[in-house]
Amino acid sequence: MMIPEQVRRKLAQGVGPSFGLVLMVALGYNEQLGATQPFEVALKMRYPALFAVRRE
View 1: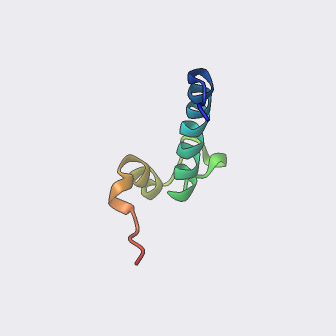
View 2: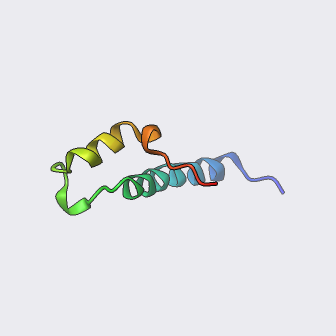
View 3: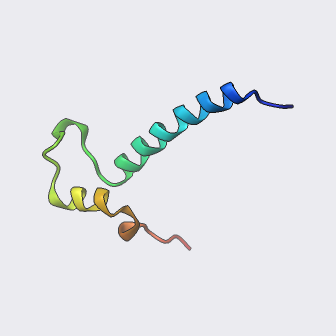
């Protein structure tokens, strides 16, 4: 079954922002604080790869 190009683009446009929001919450972002996040959260959001947890 072929998915039309236009449908694939719409799906991709929805997945990107959703993934970004999930990542922000996982890094400790608090929406109520807005731009006044603690330094640790700001650092994690700036360099998320440094704080990735390895699960074995």
